[in-house]
Image 1 (cartoon, rainbow, N blue to C red):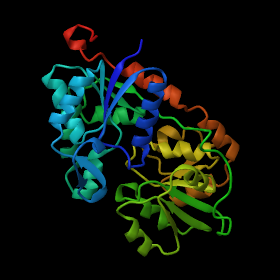
Image 2 (image 1 turned 60 degrees about the vertical axis):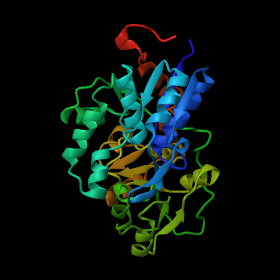
Image 3 (image 1 turned 120 degrees about the horizontal axis):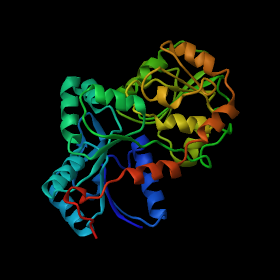
Image 4 (image 1 turned 30 degrees about the vertical axis):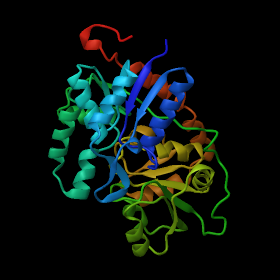
Length: 343
């Protein structure tokens, strides 16, 4: 049975992050299975730059147009991926029309706005409980995130939506940084305060530290750490080559709910060093592929001893096909509460 599935997200291109990667791969796989996907994304609306992060665009005055899109598409399943303006508009639409929907929890939103705007974390989670409250199910990537949300007063039914990796794109090779002193310790991702990159760059560690990515903290970190190599935003084949050229992948973030880039590194044969927090704790479940320690220097030192083949083999257990199957099975009929199937 093929279905019409509406997928609403505030995170979309030109952003390059784990949320966008997950959504794109999931929707592509669903379409390949014959389902009709209606992606509602910010590029379809008038937008403004996100405060403190201008490269992220936020849709404004979007409810009327979003309503028309959903009316015309007549979805049988509705998923709201993010808590931004489009997510709020879709939530309003569903409640107005008595439609059942699912949501997903991708980022530690309350912690992010606390870092950027000093809004109390308790206020952020009050908003999140309100936003996700009407959802039939909340999809989360890991058990630790589910446990944390339950402890914070969420009453929803939680269900797993894991992540995947493309092993034909990320694979071991060594084509970049051949002239730089080894070992190459690398961070790949958004160069922003919530990624805690300074914790990595501040470490006295042999070899060369490389940062791949762009973001609002890039100029500040370049000035503060002139010995580090900043290669800027990379995508496609250049990104895969950069990733595979590292000797250890360093993930200093304490606010990620999964960290899909960890799988990309492992598929590239690169071991991981990270703090023992949600995200790394759920992904790096074998000490043969990564080291987690509050002493990041120790984690990096120990990770360098690990075997590239073990890392690659570990990552092969994750696939976008399995990820998409999980997502599809989590969806609920839009008219579930009315007791009738939408035709």
